[in-house]
Length: 222
Length: 222
DNA sequence: AGATATTTTTAGGCTAGTCTAAAATTTTAT
DNA sequence: ATAAAATTTTAGACTAGCCTAAAAATATCT
Image (cartoon, rainbow over all chains, first blue to last red):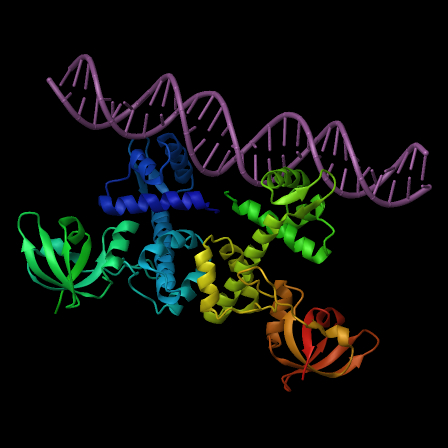
């Protein structure tokens, strides 16, 4: 069965909203917002996707991915994240530059290509933002990291990933020289606004607002 | 201006027919044949491409690429051939497997990506079939190689490329273990049917029909 | 529970890109 | 040089994917 680029993007959108939603089903308006098109257009497409058995859809009741749709979504995510690793690791792109290109590359259809790319990159488990890469069977590793803001203590942490992927946030992190694997030492906590005074790799000093520290995923330094 | 995938494929088709045609202009039927769709559809699209100034088109008179169209075509060819190098050199794909995947990858839009891929691969001048890769300015190196059949003498030659790209031909060459750079020694010429008895790298013995030897591009061994 | 607000679907319309069949133009052959 | 053949264009129709506006269903508020 032929799946169009547009259909793939709907599947991906349903998947991505749903994983945040913890399995409540995705509404027409959520999709319309996410994909930047009108609710009526979304309804049209949902009918077509249901026809193709990629989703479970009941009028007015929201939508779930079918097993088939779920597999497809995971396949796309796998490709997206592998290409991001390729772009950063092999072609030396910066953090904030890879998303748009990977958004195109994720639609290339060739299982063999995905497989070989995976091997070429050393079967990475996480992408450059710390997001897990599904393996060839669709299995996801789980990152134990939590938001820096969650700990609310001084101490040393290792930077494992981000939970916000906007260009401006990633550019900010680059600008202060913070990358995956770096050491973050929390030296002071301001109890009034939950801002933190931190040091990166024992060198540069910075302040993190609550908004920043809640989007930085860390593990406790062992 | 937005160029669709379909439009890119038309531009590429016009370019590819025209380079064989040595600048005579491309007919509607040639395009219809090449792209496997109907003549009426082609006419529709030619109007649109002319509107966008990508081609010069006069009713009933065939079509040429404009400068703009020519640049676009060369850009697509450049991407196609760079990706083929990537697929073979880095991902170890076989000769006959790379074309279909490169056909998808050539449409990825990012000048920065093309540039970095080029550097990553060491700015190759030829693709794995011996076809020249346009540089970032659109300049093509020119292969001095000629068809093996052209020489019509015994002697030693270096295999530089192919002038036929079908899967079956490439698979045949793989099957006899012939790859770019290999030494071809012509030991006998059959004057009746122009078939050749040859040895590859001083080892394996084979017979080349006229059809084979006219699609194998070689240079004289120095 | 009934009125109001919100969400979702339906209906009708648009464009890109395709098709078929008929009409127009060009080429070839007598 | 004209008739026949081949090529190309036009005209009308279809699908995918989008839009707007109106109608239907659901959710919310008092």
